[in-house]
Length: 102
Image 1: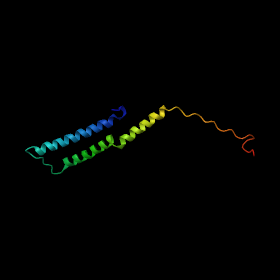
Image 2: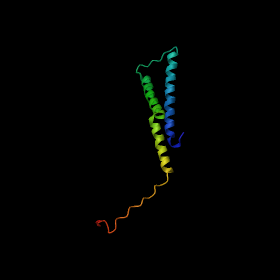
Image 3: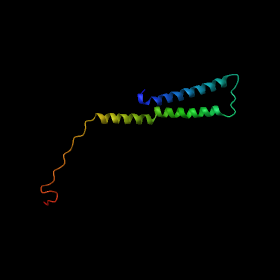
Image 4: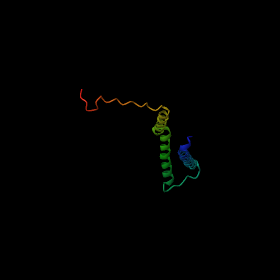
């Protein structure tokens, strides 16, 4: 884990654990002798929200956003390793100044 992005990892683990817990509870009650009564659908709305959050976490960590950040870090690292460009000399003006005619 990278030190400056630790909060992203904590949030990702929290979403994953909550999703697993809600899914586990739903599975437990679906196979138990007393089925769960949810008249308002709030548990399933929670599961839907957690599902979309889990999808966003997966897309960040395994998708193009993560790769783009790594590419930017690599470019910065390369730029700091290169030597500074050499100063180019300006060409001398023609003799007699800029108003001189050939």
